[in-house]
Image (tube, rainbow, N blue to C red; front, side, top):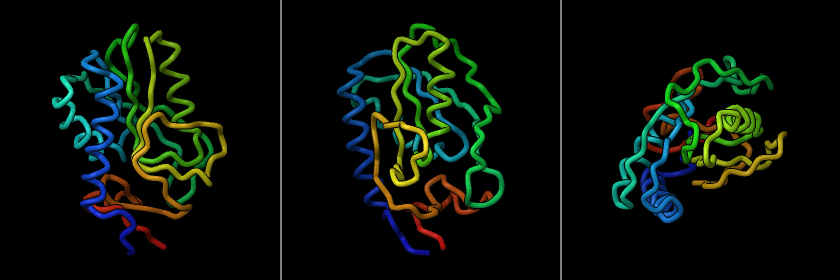
Length: 171
């Protein structure tokens, strides 16, 4: 496995993202919605720094799937578990691990906008622009990466490697 993004690079960029988000939301009441399962490590580190900007978000999760077993998207997005909090009139920040085809976040944003939030923004740790099949641009991006399969820091391959403290490229 080749290390693509080191632990120290992750920490540094996440601190920058915390500051970017903090400046934009400026003490607003927000609801952070993590897309499970891949985003849980990133989301935890991200929200831990929000106190620096007087942000105390509500946190909820959605389980969304477009992958079966293996390395390829099925092309079909399924919402397996929806949010449990009322988001009407709320500032929403969706946090996901990786933006590749664009289908998942496009589907989730459209789904949540139907519930009448004040705003919906997205934050992704990784962006694979070359994989885009649906027009979508995240509001906050950690790293742009090449078209390769990555694991670590919450991302998995068949349920393994989420525990790695870095992002690694696998063949």
